[in-house]
Amino acid sequence: MSASVPARRLILLVDDDPLLLDYLKTILDHAGYDAVSAQSAAEALQRVAEREADIALALLDITMPGMSGLDLARRLKDHTSVAFMFLSSVDDAETARQAASHGAVGFVVKPVDAARLLPAFESALARADEIRQLRRTEANLNAALTAGRETSLAVGLLMTRFQTDRNTAFEVLRDHARSNRRKINEVAEQLVSAEELLNSLHGAFAGRLKGK
Image (cartoon, rainbow, N blue to C red; front, top):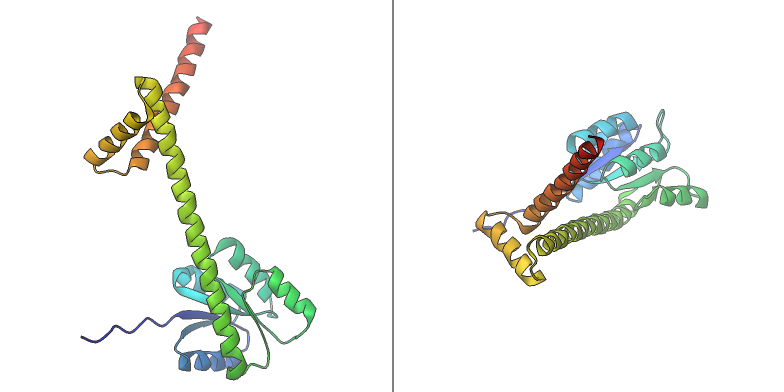
């Protein structure tokens, strides 16, 4: 049985020069990548809307008519999960500083050749992968902490309501979740929400009785 061939990673190329786009696509194709191109920032945003989850990295020309590469980068950073690096015809410290301040994971100076592009590109892609992994880890940690807080609150409610100890309250909550084939944090969240609703209604009833 032959080993499965790993999927080719997708790169978004953004430049207003169609000849350069074709050249970049050829370089990346020979290096084992797939590429989709856009000749403007607006077209690039459309490509992202269509295939955001598939795009491993975007390569953006800094200077383009209309929305610049820097403005596009800001949109990508604020509203998507797509990592990006820059292409620039200017090689100076200020341009590099701007690129870094916008969150770029790499920077390549034109004219582009394969010998310089591929090492910079692969380094940027590795950095993009690290950032994605950190985001996933942070999201998982936040989810775990949120679930932990909900469970702790639910256990406290059960202890107060039924005058029992923490271990017993947790075991009852866990067993109830298991018997109903649900996650304990889901049951905990439902219990906390119900308690909040009851407290809210209690306040409403108290207000009505006071007004009579």
